[in-house]
Image: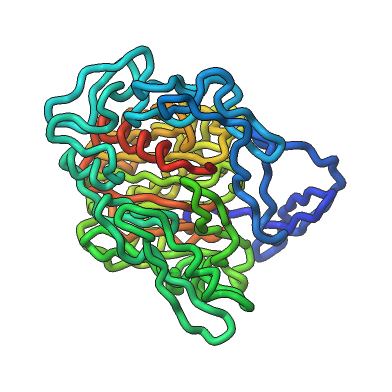
Length: 470
């Protein structure tokens, strides 16, 4: 158990629900109190998502008003304008050629990478050239000996000597050469399963195969395949910890989005304070190659910036191998949401934070670092990287712009230095199977070793170029 938890009260249209703790002789109980509210618009781009009980969301409705310049980039005049259904940056867009993009801009132009304030020199053996805040202007992601412009995130990390030891996505291949299975769906009518593969090497998911297979019934996501050579596939979390009966599989059609012009499906997780109901979660307690102890690692994920809550824990990353809380430092996982049960970021959230067991941290203590600001975008890129003595958090808009370092410094104390990571992989639940957080996952990986800034920047450029919401 990471901390005493406040039970989740089901909300209803027009009401908000709060819980109140009542003490009695042998312990305590909770009651839920409903109060009427006036609905307000939320989000920065005009779109919203329903709660888990209200059905499947439309996570991103795409952009409107974008035009192409003669040389292939998004136009600088106007760029992509926000629509009533959820567009992106109202300013910017990128120039027609050369691959430069402002932090408020749209998709990268031909050449792929973005830069702030100019091109930057190509690295001799890295993934990209460096400039004030970004990548090289000419040549996109590639440097001499680095990853090519068509590389996937895991090719980029491998070129920086921090290879992926787990690569999960239900929307696209994370290696340029990968054309295998991305995930598996289970049909409710007869319990049969079908693997959903990439359409081509390095391509997007063949969602049409899912649609055909699930016609006339419903499907759940039964396996999320590891695209790396380690075979660290994710299946529904087994019983243990807070989930006496284990987790539940995500509804396969609940998170439909468009990426690069292709309709695909993410992993829509739901939470509950009722252990009998459980929550959506995936886990692998017997992994290969994942960091243990105080070994360095990197973790990134692309998630919905509109589907989150204030509870623990919508996590992706490294956790305990027995589904239990084994104490501070026994896990190292990315969290996205606006929980303030332990630490927090500045502002009102949501934030990219680190679940390190017995605490979710926005920085080196429970205090809010001024650098870890709220990330209110439609699609989020989140990163957590740890090494002996320190860790860092990064976040950005998965549709445009560079990453921001939210925190880079010492680990919390006491108990988190050195780390005691155990090497399981979780998605959608906490290390002790905490199942009250919610979010939507699209892609992510774990690396062996501590990634460089250049690799992270190149991965962000690759994510932007993939075309989330377009």
